[in-house]
Amino acid sequence: MTRSFWSCAALALALAGCVAPPSKQLAPTAAGTTVWQFDDLRRVGGAATRVEGDPQVIQTAAGPAMQFDGKDDALFIESHPLAGAREFTIEAIFRPDGGAFEQRWLHLAEAADDVPAGTYSPVPPSGPRMLFEIRVVGDRWYLDAFATGPGYNKALIVPEKTFPIGQWHHVAQVYDGRTYRSYVDGVLQAEADIAFQPQGPGYASVGTRINRRDYFNGAVLSARFTRSALTPEQFMRKPAVD
Image (cartoon, rainbow, N blue to C red; front, side, top):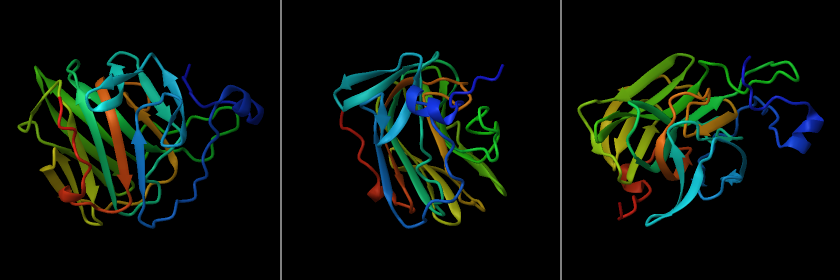
């Protein structure tokens, strides 16, 4: 049986906190910024959430953050903050704590079209999406930034560029209308030209893939989504603590 986390009738939406399918009209493309602070399990960036497993809001030297156990902890968010954007910057400050080799910890996905009432599944298995993953090798990790949709499909991944686990890191992926780039701690990791097309409204997951695979072991402090291509000098600042 398919596990659908937003399947209910209109009345049940209000009573049970389920989420209605978003409109497929693209959001405005004007430059703007959305910030997500991971200090409240009930709402993130003003959007409703669904919690699975037992993620925890913890106090760290960098401030409140959300801890995930790498097994079944996940947060699903009623928002695709870059829907309609033709250029974008996705940033996050997170702390990987080791564990499984492949871990997806931030996933933005376009919602499905024309799903019958009462059987709504938010996203198709391989629809348009943007995401961050990591690969863990011993006590180090490397970044996998990925974007896909009609006419484009690109992973930015460099196994030779690794970083220590157990520390806070800033990661970013940027698209300027032609070139897609990824960064760790403000340093370019990889780049490629892609024919990106704006994605429609949808949902996000934190701590796992949106179809509940490859769970993340670590903490997420914050994320920022900008409808323009930022330079490293404009990125969020990483906390000066570990």
